[in-house]
Length: 128
Image (cartoon, rainbow, N blue to C red; front, side, top):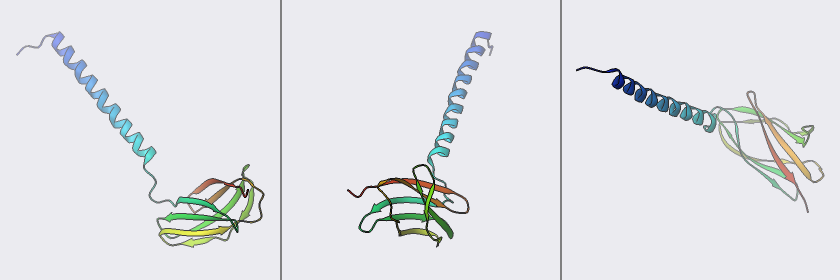
C-alpha cells in the first residue's frame, strides 16, 4: 500500500488536532479539580451566624483531626479587637458559640487559626 505525501500530511494534521484537544481537556479537568475540590486535611468553617440578645457568634466547624483553634475578632482594617481562649477540638463536626464583646454596629471579621492554616470570614453586627 502506497502513501502519498498529501495523505500522510492529512493524517498527521488530524492526529495533531485530536492530540491538542485531548491535552487541552486533560489540563482543564486538572485545573478544575485543583480549584474546586476542598482540601481534606484542613479545618473548615461551615457556618457563621450572628445571634443577638446577648450578641454572640454561632459557629459550625469541621475538624479532620484533633486540633487547637485560636479565634480572633478583627475590625474591617484587620486590627485585632478581641481574642477568645483556644479551643481544643477532636475530629468531627462541632457547633459552639463565642460571646461578642461590647462593639458598635459595623462590619467585622472572624479569624480562625490552626497550626497549618488561617481562615477569615466577615460578618455584620447590626442591632437596629
